[in-house]
Length: 123
Image (cartoon, rainbow, N blue to C red; front, side, top):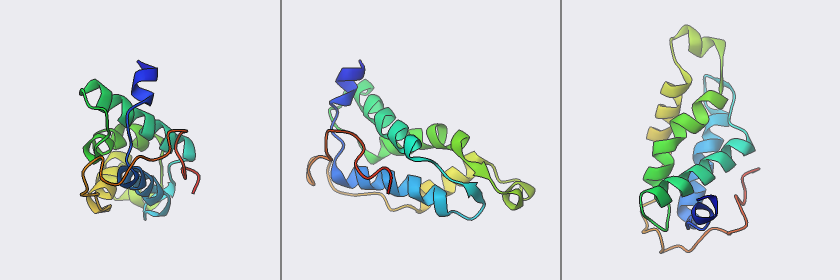
């Protein structure tokens, strides 16, 4: 299954979207420590696996959105001010997903991201 899921296409716009969601955790008010590059890789691979399980050979932004709360929330350190306002990592992740622009191109229109892994995950 891992090899099959690793072959699932992640287009450049979806790849960029995934990285923008992760980067947003690093600059979001209320987050003391955002998601790491390893979180980017986990979200990337998880989205590939979800697409594969759903019978697709390509990842949709909806795959990223579906997994982001589970993959990212437990990796975030919430600032004291946010906790005092009863904000949780899950609620903040939801706010991030509402505000990061979702790509609108079809999955194959912009071409694939490099197959070697999560290019730019460290950016």
